[in-house]
Length: 446
Ligand code: DOR
Ligand code: ZN
Image (cartoon, rainbow, N blue to C red; front, side):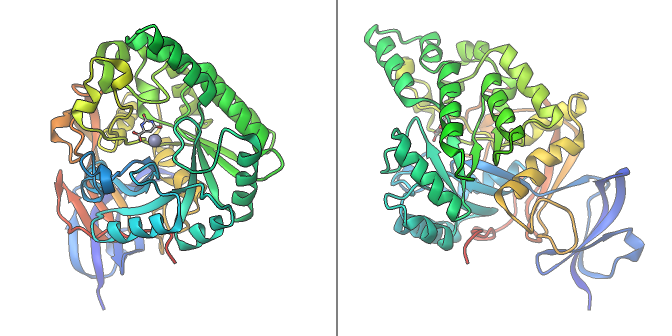
C-alpha cells in the first residue's frame, strides 16, 4: 500500500548540517525521513526542489481576536496570516470581547474556531473567577492560562498578592502553565494619570509611563509569589535586560520559569517609536538600543527560551490617532517573524539550529506538545518549508491579517516561508492559501 504523500528533493538540518532527504507522510503524521531511494511509493509526490524543511513553527503568543473584535481579525484571517508566515500552530490569547475567562466562554470559542481555522490552534484561558474551575478549563482544552497584570480581563483581583498566589498554587496543582504580562499596574496607572493630566500626548510621555521599572517590579513580584508553589510561569514579551536577568537568575536557582521575546523588542528601539508613533505602539513599549542589543545576544546564547510574535492586530484608525493615549497598543507579527529571524541567520548573527529551537522545539517542549516541534517519525506532519535565500521587502498591504500595517514595512529581509503543511495537508503554497477553513484543529481538546 502506498503512503499518502512523499516530499522529494528536501533538505533538513541534522547534527551533520543541512542534508538532502525525502519525507513520507501517512495519516497526518511523519511516516519516514530518509534518502529518497529508501522511501516507499506514495499516492502523491511533491518535489520541493532543494528547499529547507523546518519542523512546523509554533507561535505561543497570538491574538486571533474574532467574536466582537472580528473587525480587527478573525479565526480565519488570523490563521491565514499564520500559515502565510510559516506557523503551523498558534496559541490564542484570552483578552477578547467577551474575554475567555470561564468554561462557557472557552467552549464558545472552540466551537466557533473549529470550522474556520487553517492551522492548529490552542486556546489560553484567563484565570477563572472560581479557582475550582481551573481543572475543568484545563480538562476541556485550555492549553495554558494568561495573567495580564496591566490590563487584566479576569474577574480575579490580580493586584492582590494573596489572590495571585492562590491562583498560582491551583495552576501548579493542575500542572498548568501561566503566561504573565509583567508590567506593574499601580506604577503605570500613576504615571499615566500624571502625564495625561499635564496633557503631554507625545511618544516620550508614553515611554515614561511604561518605564523599565514597571517590568522589573512585576517580574520581582511574580518571582516572589511563585516561590514554593512550583507553578510554571512563562514570562511573555520580556523587553528589558534587567527583567531578563532576574528571570535567568531565578531559572538558575531552580525555579520552573521560562520566557519569550518578540521580534519588535529585538529589532526596534524607542527611536522607531518616535518616528512611527502609533504604528509602533505596543505594551510593553519599545526600549533603548542597549536593551535590544542585549536581548539579541541573549537570544543567541540560549538565555531566551523562545520567540513569539505577540500578533496583536487592530484597525488602522485605532493606531493612527494623534493623541498617543488614544492609540490602541499592538502590532501584527505573524507574517514578519520568520523572515526577520531568517535574516539574522543570513547575516551570520544566529544559527539555523537556534531559529528552529526558539520557533519550534522550545515552544513545543515548554507548552507540552508531545507530537510537535521535531521532524521525526510519528510526529505531526507540520512542516514549514523555507527558501533561505529569497530576498524581499516587507509590505503590510499584502498581509493576510486584517491589520495592514507594520513597523517593519520597507525592511529588506532574506528568507521566506514557501509552503506550510499542517498535519500532512498543504495549507500555504507560494504565498497562496490553498486549504479550506477547518483544516486546522483545536489542540488540547480531549
Ligand atoms: O501591545 C499589546 N497589545 N500588548 C498587550 O499586552 C495586549 C495586546 C493586544 O491585545 O492588543
Ligand atoms: Zn499579547
